Amino acid sequence: MDPNVMVQWLDSELQELLWAYVAETAHSEEVADILRAVSQEHPDYLRVKELFETMEAYRRIGQEVYARRRERRVDSAYDLACGHGLLGILLAWRLRSVEVVCVDLERRVAFDHYLEGVRRAGVELSNVRFVEADITTAEQAEQCLEWYCLRWRLEDWHRVLKSGCQIDALGDETAERLQRGIAINAVIAWRIMLMTLLGRACPELPAGVLLSDLEIKVLQAYARKKNIKQPTHLGDAVRLVARLGGYLCRNHDPPPGHQLIWQGYTVLQTLCEGFSLKGDPDSS
Image (tube, rainbow, N blue to C red; front, side, top):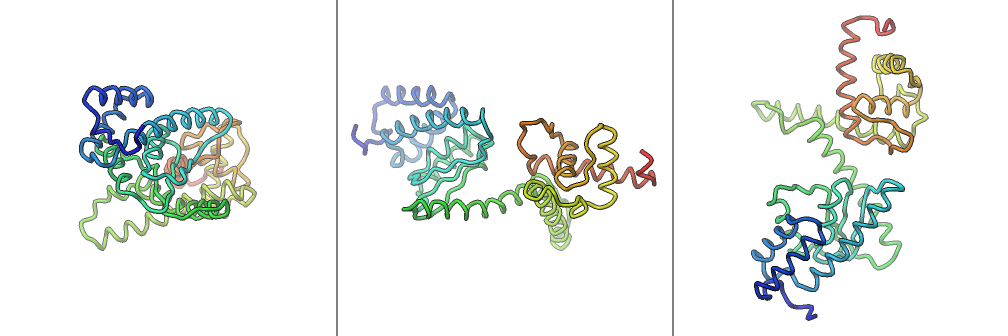
């Protein structure tokens, strides 16, 4: 197969067969429609050989990820020397709970065309990123992953700030008030992130490191009501906060994430207000 043949160079019958193959491999007519639209709008960016290679890799990697998720949680996938990045975008489409990182020397225009095609279909696809880096050794690859892990903390914080604190919904009439509202919510988002991460990394710390006396009393009352372990340490307290947000806390469940913590922390604040009005939390 000539590696330079573009999809748009094929006659209509061959194109229909190609798109049928894409839909069958991706288990999605929508994926085929998106790539068809990108190919028509940008005919110089989608080659037939690259499309076949990408779809086969997509099928095999997707199967492997699903198989591994039966044994343990898969949080991230890295497509090194990703080229046009179509594989990473398709994996992010299929595995919405997995963060996909595409890595190459430079970000090609084709990557943005594919990403725009997906977003035009109504899917934001916030779980895919592109990192420009030169990786020739295993040590450089490890360094790149370390850098990206640090950067991803900022992405997590931004998600908590936007989706958890819902700063987009602030209705302040002046820029000054809006700045104050964002500043307050930025601290709240940082606190939620810190609670999530310290609960995993340092569960043996005392709960009072991050929680107030009233919050601890409320969680203790909740633990008594549910007949579960009292939250003497930070890890126990964080899991209780997550339970308020819907965390099931089963034996094989992974540690709670930011979303469960912000949902639980919202409920905890409501309970704290009620306990404050009652005046004696210990009596519950």
